[in-house]
Amino acid sequence: MTSPGAGRRAVGRGAIITRMRSLVVASLLVAGTAAAEPVRAPFHVSYDADHLDLDGRVLQFQMSRPAGSAELVAVGEDGQPLGTGSASYDKQPPGTWLSVSWTQPAEARVLKLQLRAVSTDGLVTRVELIPWSVTIEHEDVNFATNSAAIEPAEEAKLDASLGKIGEVVKRSEKFVKMQLYVAGHTDTVGPAGKNLTLSLDRARAIAAYFKRKGLALPIVFAGFGEQVLKVSTPDETDERRNRRADYVIAPVGAPPPFKGPYLKAHVSWKQLR
Image (tube, rainbow, N blue to C red):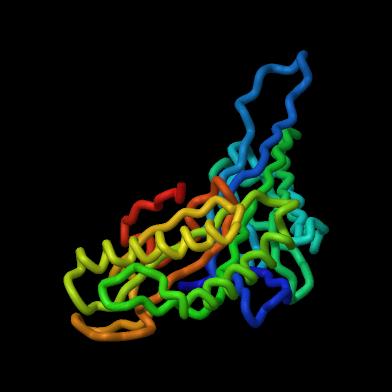
C-alpha cells in the first residue's frame, strides 16, 4: 500500500508514517456578482485525489469558467501555514486541468490545502481540501488458528498501538475530525470465503479492544481476507506477513484512505457500535 496517498512531519517518524491519502471538502464559498449584472452560471472547481501530488507539492483542479488565477496555502498538522503558491492562467476553457504548486519545509506534513480560484470574469471560489491520513506502524497481533480471540499475551501490542494513535489525535484533533480504520487480512491457507470472515472477525476484535481501552475516535473495520496480500504467494501458503491488520487514521467524511489493490476488493466497512 502506498502513501494513498505527502509532505511529511517528523513527529514520531519511526513509528508513524503517512501512507494513505484521502480528499475531503471542508468548505466552499463562491463570491456573488453585483445585482445589476446579468445572472451568471455558478462558479466551482473540481478535483480528485488522483490529481494531487503531495510529494511533488502540486495540485491539479478544474474550473467551471475560463481560468484566471489561483492561490494556495498549505496548512500543517499544528494548524499553522506551511507554505504558499500561486499561478496565473491564460483563459483556459472550463474543464481544463490546471496546476498550482507550493513550497514547504521538506519534513512537514500537510493537513489541509486552502485554494482560492479566480475566473477571468472575476468570480472567486474558495475551497478547503483535507488530503491527510496517517498509518500507524505497529506489531501485529498473533491469533490462534481459526480464532479471533485476543490472547492476554498479545494485549501489550495493542496497548502500544493505542499510544501511537493517541499521539496523532493529540497533535491534530483541534484541526480535523478523524476516525480510525482497522483492516484485517489473512494468508492463503484455507478457503477464501472462510478467510474473509476470519479477517473481519479479527478486525472487529481489535477495534473493540481499542474502544474498551477508551479510544474516543469513531472506529470502522473491514475484513479483506486473502484479497490484498502483502507478499504474493501461491494458494495454501502459510505466510506470516500476510496475517496482518492496517490501522489508519483519516478525516471523518472522507472516502476510505485505501488505494491500489484495496479498491478491487469491494468490501463493506462497518461502524463499531
